[in-house]
Length: 51
Image (cartoon, rainbow, N blue to C red; front, side, top):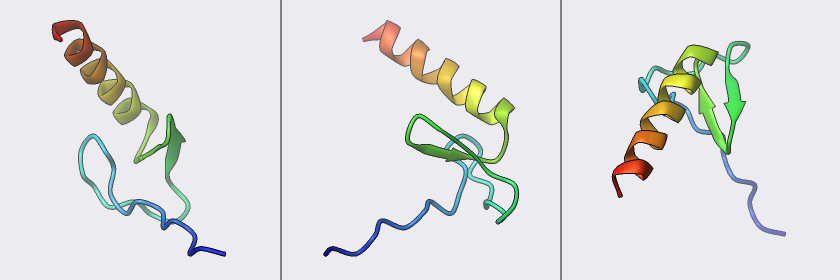
């Protein structure tokens, strides 16, 4: 068996370090909270609309 993939250590949106008890996982990404996830999703939506 292969080595398990490690959890990302920083939030995808703000790049804050993730604490063990306080992380938010959505759409194959780890975020520090729900607000960061929504901001990241909005940013991704805008980028895809421009392309």
